[in-house]
Length: 223
Image (cartoon, rainbow, N blue to C red; front, side, top):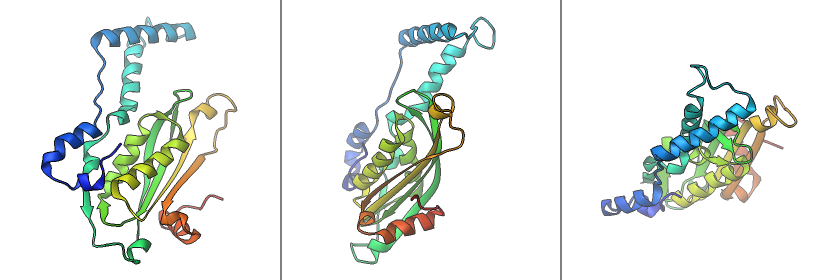
């Protein structure tokens, strides 16, 4: 989870507590790493991979490290902490002014098959008393998606975390992705994308703001 906006712009004395709450460093001991690599070697061998060649002997080690790197989102990102005040103080003009960022590329691992899915995200919000640096929206998307999960849940998690961080008037999130679990196995779809949306606050009040979000993002609105 991310810190509350009041804390994000709060006193420096609270920085260590904020970081402790936000960050969750991971580590794998040398003994565990060797054990996990042994398990992977057994699996790869059983599936037919010859691990006796110079090219493939390190494959279990590389695969374990690749999984570790692909799920670094569990560790969080301290740079998401920064939020800034805005000149908007709840007036009607602020309720209509959107900030939209995207496309934000992302790569993730499906929690059902541990196979990759990848695509792009668009994030929009209507500021209330705080704004967030544009790069922080990209960091938020990547923290959430660099984990095991499903696209539907990740879409809502991005919306919920941005809502909690800024307490804006509204939040809109749109993700579209290719899922290798359906392209490499199962029905073996090659081209379809999965599209998911999440709306909060003023985006749920009517159709106009949602339509503007898709227009500003340069997207064709899902039917």
